Image 1 (cartoon, rainbow, N blue to C red):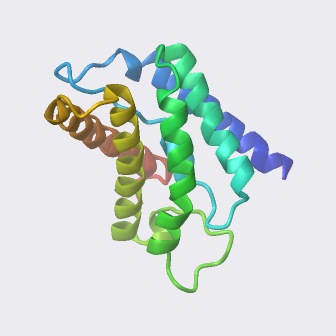
Image 2: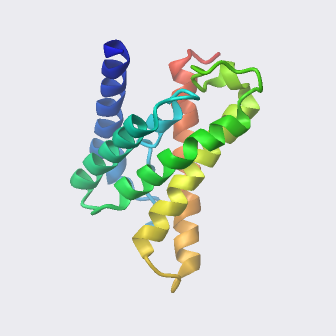
Amino acid sequence: MIQVFFIRLVRFLALVAFQVLLLNHIQLWGLGTPMVYVSFLLYMPLVSQRVPTLLWAFSIGLVVDVFSNTPGMSSGAMTLTAMIQPSILSLLAPRDAPDNLVPTYHTLGKLNHVSYVMLVYMVHHLAYFFIESFSFYDIWATILGMVVSWTVSVSIALALESFRHGGR
């Protein structure tokens, strides 16, 4: 149990540092910024306790909010994503999957894993960008920014996943 906590803590710190020190300084055509800290939720087991998962998600969002000067946007989007993530995972996991299934290319299959990553990031980015705009006034600019940011974020997340498993 303590080992799992420290692994999550190291992943938490690495993703926050990557996001805050590098990715927050990238503006893609003035529309969006890659958000890779969402990957923290991707590796939560199929059946994990709800409250600790929500606390981890809120915490990573809060830390990113503090360093990015985005009051509540990341923490709100991450908390919503943490609420929906188990449903997305159970939808794409094999029927005979064990309870401690950690979603990877090998456990879900490549197509299901890519779909899982895309859906989790889609939920986060929809929440984040609509919290950011807080209106439907210029909805096309919001959607365009979300799509640009989502595309680059998913690409980086999938690249990190392939590096994590040695390109297998």
